Structure formats: C-alpha cells, structure tokens
Length: 419
Figure 1: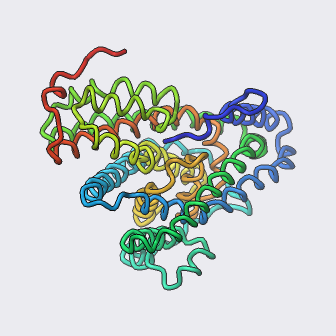
Figure 2 (figure 1 turned 90 degrees about the vertical axis):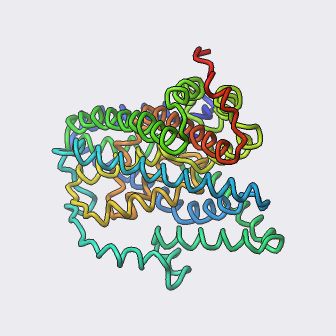
C-alpha cells in the first residue's frame, strides 16, 4: 500500500504514524489513571469516526471511477491491463480469505467483551447469499449513494467507469471532473487523517478506562497473525502461482523479490518502492520494459493484497472483541467488498484505516474498533506493503511470459546477492 500515514512529517518533524502511537499510549495512560471518568474524552474519538464515515462513499465512488478509466485504450494495453486486473483481484480475494481464516482459527479478539456506543452489539440476521448478490445491483444509484450502501456504490462505480472507457473521447470531460473530485477527496482524507492522533487518544482513553489494560494483550496476537498471513501469501500463493501457472522456479522468484520487498518493508510505500520494483523486474526476473512500465505502476495503484489480508484479520478481530457473530454471508461480503474496492483506493493517504472502516461498515461492525487497530497500524503496514510489492512482481512475470516478452535466461540466472 502507498502509505500514506508514514510519508510526511508535520512541521515539528514528527511523522503521522508516530503521532498516532503517541496518542494511543497517552490515551491508555489517561484511561488507566482516570478509569470510567475518561469517558469524557470519547467525543474526541467520535468526531474522528464521524469524519471517517463522511469520507467513505465519495472517496470510494470517485476513486473507483478514476481507477477504471485510467487504463489505456490500445488493444495491447487493454489486454495486458485486463490480465493484470484479473490476477490482482484473484490474489486480493485469496489474501483476505487467508486473513479471515487465521482470525477465525486463532480468535485474537476473544475475551475482550467490548460493547459499542449505545449498548451491546447484537448479531444481525444475514440475508441468503443469493439475495446479497441481487442486492448488489442498485435500483436507484442515487439512493445507494445517499444511504451508504457500499456494495451497490462499488458496483455502480465500476459499471460507470467501464462505460466511460467504452465511449472513448466523449468521456474525457466527465473523466476530468471525476479525477478532480478524486484528488479533492484524497486531500480531504489527508486533512481528516491529521485528526487521527487526537481521535485515537480519545477512544483509547475511553477503552482503557472502561475495559482496563488487558485490552492491549490481544494486539500482540493480531500482529503475529497478520505477519504469518503475509508470509503464507508470498510463500504459498505467489510462489504457487509462479510454479503452477507460470511453470517457473518459485525459488528464483523469491530471490528476485528480496530487494524491493526489503525497501517496501522499511518505506511502507508501494509508490516509493516502484523504482526498485521495476529494476528487479527487468534486471532479475526477466520482465520486458514495456510490461514492467505498465503493469507495476498499475499494481502500485490497485493491488492491495497485503491490505486485504490485514482487513480480513482486523474485521474478525473487531467482531470477536465486540461479540458479534458473523454469518457465512458476512464473510463473503467482506471478501467481495475488499476485493472490488481495491481497484481504486490503494494510493489514498490513510487508505488502510479508510478501507478497514469501509469493511466494518459493510457488515455492521462498530467503528470504535478502529482505535485499537490504529495504534499498531504502522507495524502492520510494513508487512502488508511488502506483500503488495511481491504480488506486483509476480503478476508482471506471468504477464510478460504470457505475452512472450519474457527473458527466461535472465530469470534462471537471477542475482542471488542482496544489495
């Protein structure tokens, strides 16, 4: 993920992610000292949560349209772009499934017994899956936007984006408007994220005051599960695809991704890692220059495998913490929402928390859970960004081979040294 939280220090030289951690620690301390009286600080957190809710619909709608219309309209680029998007969406779905499975098995949020504002959270009765699929198509797109029906908004945005691509030159004025709106939403998101340290402080003070310091213990399990899931995604999903579909050595692939993965881990930015990613693809993995130049920037924009895995683990963590029993339909909705939304929101500042809030909203989980996750977001971001970059490289190798623009000799002789 192009994150966003770690990029720009403020005027005092403290990066946003550091401010969030400081806010979390101070909130825990204040909550531990003042106990239930710390609830007076909760409105600060509520303000931040409301601001996040304000962003979700316009941000996702505009970003998805821009993401779809950004594809080139030539035959070859259209073919390559289609292959890339299909592979990115499939691996994203696999990643979030891994995250869900790990969280279900190891139940990181068990025993927290938290309650959302207004009392206990009750599990809602899930509609049949076929009804969920039918409900994705909005009868009234304007009503879907106004009511905040995430899946309907995503579906309509994708359809509108595809239609704009198909009408060609006539779509340019509309696309320009949506690009401007998307940029405005990115800027607004950046402004809202400046409230994150204060929001996390207020919510963590309330949480620690109400539930005690034991609320922090499951965070260790949460971190471990996300890292284990990321390792599984790279070693088994990506390497398996390279071997089974590409017919290539997964060991060579793993050797070739070491350098960009290490840079992504430290910078937490897919875009910032892009020069190293392109260099590794061309000089170590045998990907042609045209393929690398198109597929990898596209992946840095729309590929969110690591973020999707993180969302799967965190969504179940929040459900367990608040005692919400999710039905199978809810799990499928989480997978669909995260996979489809990945097309347009990877490069948004604050995308990790925005995307998580989108998933929580879709299945009716309380957004108060964001406060707990936000404090460790930087640690989780390091792993998920590395996974995103590794996925980009895997897709570039497969497409280059499929397009017969692949240097097999270079791939087999991939440099094993780590610069």
